[in-house]
Image 1 (cartoon, helix red, strand yellow):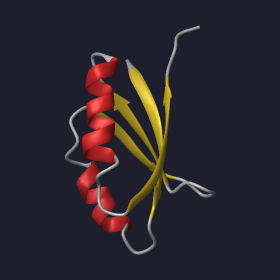
Image 2 (cartoon, one colour):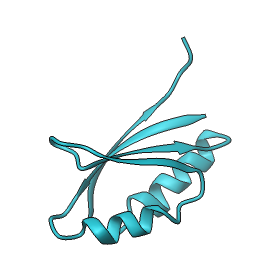
Image 3 (cartoon, helix red, strand yellow):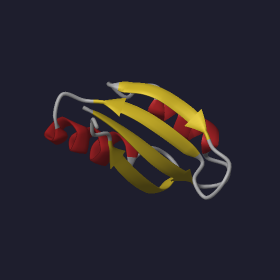
Amino acid sequence: MRAFILVKIATGKEREAIDSFQNIPGLEEINFLFGDYDYILTLQAPDTVTMARVIRNRIRKSPGTLQTITMIEAPI
């Protein structure tokens, strides 16, 4: 399963956040955004339990992370 995670980062913590994100298992992409959120991450995980664990313990605890929104992809 795949999810897209919008991440808001504290000013001045962008480099630390990127460095931290790059070590997350299953992270496929990191893209910079203009607007209310700073980055969109693409995360691949085998199930929702694993995905929730990675989001809770790695992404939300990354340096400077202020807020996240997770959107899980569903086939149409």
